[in-house]
Image 1: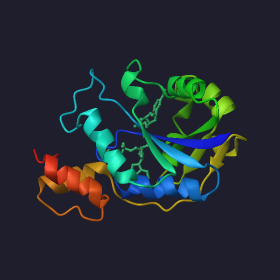
Image 2: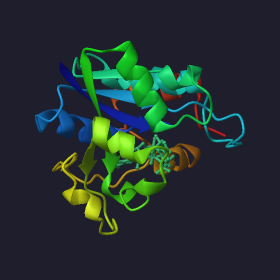
Image 3: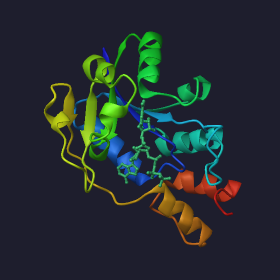
Length: 192
Ligand SMILES: Nc1ncnc2c1ncn2[C@@H]1O[C@H](COP(=O)(O)OP(=O)(O)OP(=O)(O)O)[C@@H](O)[C@H]1O
Ligand SMILES: O=C(O)c1ccc[n+]([C@@H]2O[C@H](COP(=O)([O-])O)[C@@H](O)[C@H]2O)c1
């Protein structure tokens, strides 16, 4: 069985915070690889700054480059919207029976985790890999046998900050991998 961590996000754009964290998951030895699950554009949610899902997927591919421990998946583009984590897990497990999937979440997600669809199934059949987040509320879930806390650096950067920097015509070098920066520049993403 291949141990695979799923990292869900809109990745608008993917940045070094995401990549450092995904790499820490692989380095911890808890997973062999991380799949970036790009969240689709929810047609019911209007967010003018959210790029088309294929553009965000292209940036994730550019970021992964030749890291064979990382993979990007567009699986949720073809699933009913909004996509629930449990549905994606069930679908992926059926499609890839040789993989054992776990969900990567920030510590701040634990407090509201009981509101996720079929959260018991996520916990019992899959499990969570949790990375530290600043100001996370305490949660008993940390002691659950299928919840594993993973040590990872906290990198204080967000996609919002990067988008704002581009709008302010600032240099975003080092916040995203060079290939992502080149894509953003050549396609004129986030300029207006
Ligand atoms: N710097 C970071 N370190 C660790 N996790 C992060 C970081 N930035 C975002 N995340 C987490 O990664 C997941 C995917 O992030 P997302 O694509 O929403 O990026 P974001 O930078 O938070 O975006 P935005 O600023 O547009 O809200 C989310 O669960 C989010 O909490
Ligand atoms: O499946 C659910 O019910 C569910 C409810 C809330 C959040 N999630 C997952 O958690 C991710 C982060 O959620 P949020 O609300 O912190 O942006 C989101 O992209 C989903 O993958 C999933």
